Image (cartoon, rainbow, N blue to C red; front, side, top):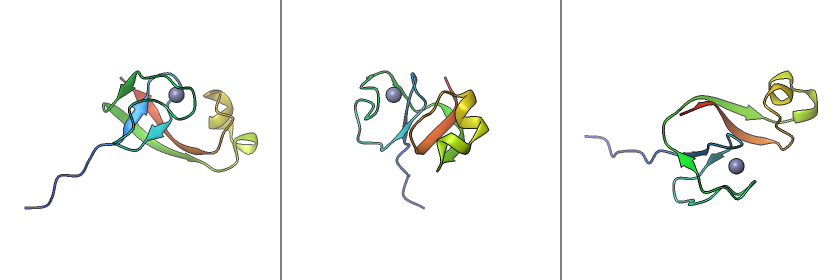
Length: 68
Ligand SMILES: [Zn+2]
C-alpha cells in the first residue's frame, strides 16, 4: 500500500498552490484555503502568459485553475 500523499492547499482568493503544512496564503495572507481544487498551472512569466492575465496573476509560481 502506497503512503497517502499530502494534498496541497490552494488559496481561495488568489489560487496560489501552497504546501500542505501552510495555514495561510504566502502571497495575500488569506487563511481561506481549500484542498478541493482542480487544474495545476505553473506560471513562469506572468507578463507573457494569457492565463496569468485572465486570472490576475502577477507573480510566478504554482496555481490552481479551479478552487471550490
Ligand atoms: Zn492568496
